[in-house]
Image 1: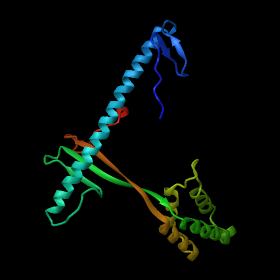
Image 2: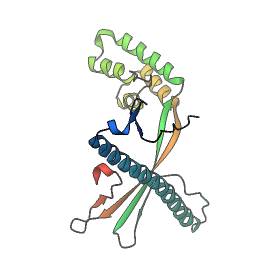
Image 3: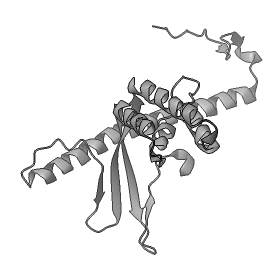
Image 4: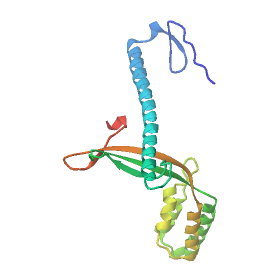
Length: 206
C-alpha cells in the first residue's frame, strides 16, 4: 500500500514528484493549484453523495415494488425488472432499469465456423454486403472482445439456409448474462406540453 509523501515546510511538490522551494513557485501556479484542487475535491464529495443517493433510491424503489406486489400475495424482493413510477399528481416520474451485460460462450466459435462455411459455399453467388456484415460482426476491439450488438444483428437477417439457421441457434445458445447493472432516472413534467424532461445529475448537462 502506497504511503503519502510528507512535503517539507517551505516546499511544493510538482507533477514529477520534485520538491520545489515555495519562493520559486509562481503566484499564478499557486492560484491554479488552489482552484483545481478545491473544485476537484468538491467534485469527489458530490460523486460520493450521488453514489449514496443511488443506493438509497434503488433500495426505496425495491421496497415500494415489494410492498405493492405483496398486496397481491406475491412475494418478491423488488430488486429486479424495469419499472416506471409516477407521483400521485403526475409531476414527477422515475424509471428503474436493469441492464444486462451480455457475453458469448464457446458456442460462438461453432457459429462462426458455420457462418464461414455458408459464405464459402455461397462463393460468387453470395451478397457482398452480407459478407462484409459477417466480417464486421466478428471483429474484435482493442481488448479482444466481440461487439455483442453486431453479432446479434446477424440474427435479424432473413436467410433460410439450414446451416445459417444452425449458426443463428448457436449464437442464441452462446448468449450469457455476465452481470446486471441497475440504473435509475428521474423526470419532471413540463406543464405546457405534458412531456417529461430528465432531471439531469450530470454536471455537464446542468
